[in-house]
Image (cartoon, rainbow, N blue to C red):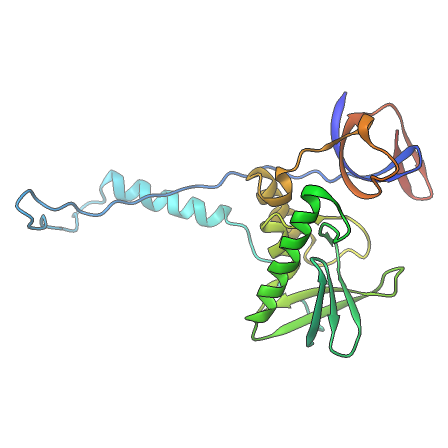
Length: 239
């Protein structure tokens, strides 16, 4: 069968992280106003003694829309205020004291990418810089360090989860790697919303496996035929 997977290419094999997301539908509600008469005088507006069908449907639709609305990522405990000095790229920051931050479970395009991915890498960097420029507060939740000794962290700008915002705008992909954080579910929902809307990076066509080469290293959206799946070292390898 043919399938699309999110992968990091290594040698002849493909290390894949697959995440299933449930589809949700958004409700759009339009409620009209009273019209004016032909002479320009506004028609008399009366509250009905009994609820009219149109008003009833309007209220029901509004309630359903509210229930299906995506919840924002919660602010965790043990947060601390920080001052950002530099935006390195869409998922990496540097503090005024020189400490390097890496957004946890979020991956933006790299500044050394080529073609359309480089375009979106620059947009993600610019978006984060704009959010920080108008921020009144920035706080983080730490989750250890990555292999490059960068601090893994959730970053909140004026109470809003930066990773969630990037995913909702289609400026990053969600990556399922340890450590798992409290915001995992809302991050997945934000990505599903962007993907279904074909927003940002989701406008890019997947790379065909037959066209993948040595230059296609790192994070890749890949489409191809799965011939075998094996497990090694706690990872799934898909060939």
